[in-house]
Every structure is written in structure tokens, then in C-alpha cells.
Length: 269
Image: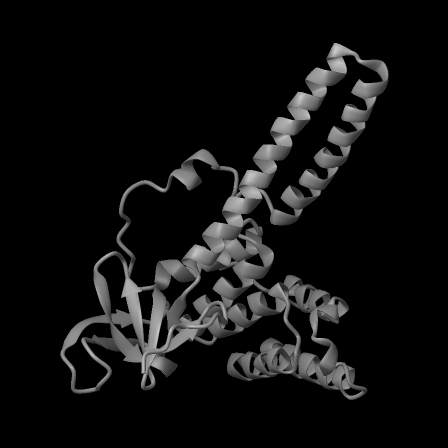
């Protein structure tokens, strides 16, 4: 795993510099002081090797309204260093939603954590989106967005130039810019769709029994281990129904799964 030394502290400083992501109602006079205290205590605990204490302080930061991909990434680092694989994968996956899949340090650490997970989802068919848009995971989302904005501006300038000078070369450049813009927008759109598609939950305990119904006495179907990424599609009586791959479906206690995206889950009466 990449050593989170100075980069770790710098990333957290980034989170506080851009704490404008906090909801407006959280910005009371005591909030900046609270954030600063939790930040200093978390970094101190991490540097002292108290990874559980660091994770606790950073979790408090999130609970106080600081929502930032760099903070999520460092929560994953703290949990991974502390041996909590389930929560490490959970926070890395949450960081992917904020930072995109192309962030090199995040991708490195997430892949490292995934390799430690016991259960691997069986792949079915070919992911044509990954094949055709092979650069999606290699180019940062910020670069794609910036490129789309720049190419869009260039396209409008070229279209204006075509109306004024009516040169064939300008028209060819406009067509080329239009094609590049369409490709960039397609990549961003697919990235947003794929991110939402894979977002689900992560198994948190070292091992859980997945059962056929919402009862601890129900038939055990199979077992999953910390860090396994699952789909969550139902909630009932303190249990959630999960899907692991195309055929493995069952129920586990709600507190055993951390949701990657805080999205509503269908509830059965």
C-alpha cells in the first residue's frame, strides 16, 4: 500500500480548505473550531499509530458536516492501517464517488484493499463500456470536465468563425471539436451511470451468514467476508436483502452492511 505520509496530511488540509461542501446549516460559529480540533486530534492519532482513534475523529468530522472525497480516502487509510478491511473498502468506495476512479493514489489503495477481500464477485459477460471507453479509469474526472468545457468553448468559436468567414477548414475543425465533445460527454455520462450502478453496500464484519429470510434461525445460504461489495435492494425488520453476483441473494442484519451511497432502499412491511 502506498505510504500515507505527507500526502496524507496534505489531503486532509485540502478537505478543510474546501469545507464549503458543508451544508449551510452546519456553519455556526463553533463549527470551524470543532473541525480544527477534530482534524488535529485525528492527524496526531494517526501519526502516533493510533489508527482506531484517527478513524474515530475523522468519522466525527464527517458527522459534523465535512463531506469531501479526500477525507473519505484518508478514513479508508486509517481503517486499512488499523486492520478493519470492511470499513476501509467502504470509505474508499465512497471516495470514488467523490473523486472519480482515475485518482492514482485512491485507485492504488482501493485495488490493494480489494485484493485482501476473500470473496470475489464472479464476472458475467463483457463490460463493453470498459472496453470501448478504455481511458475512463485512467483520466481524472476533473480533466474530462475541463476538457469538455474547453472543447465546447472552442466549438462555439469555430461555429461563429464559420458564419463570418465561411472557410472549409474552419468547418472541418468544428466537426472535429463536435466529435471530441460528444466523446467526452459520453465518457462523463457513462462514468456517472456506472458509478451509480455499482454503488451498493460493503460487508463490515469479518464474516457474516447470509440467510434465506429475516431471522437468525433462517436457513444459511452462504457466507461473505469483510470488504465484499454487494447490491442492496430491500430493507425489512432490521435486515437488508443483498445480491452478490447474479445468483447469490439473501438477507443479513442491517448493521452488517455499510451503504456506499446514502440512497433510499425499498422497505417491505
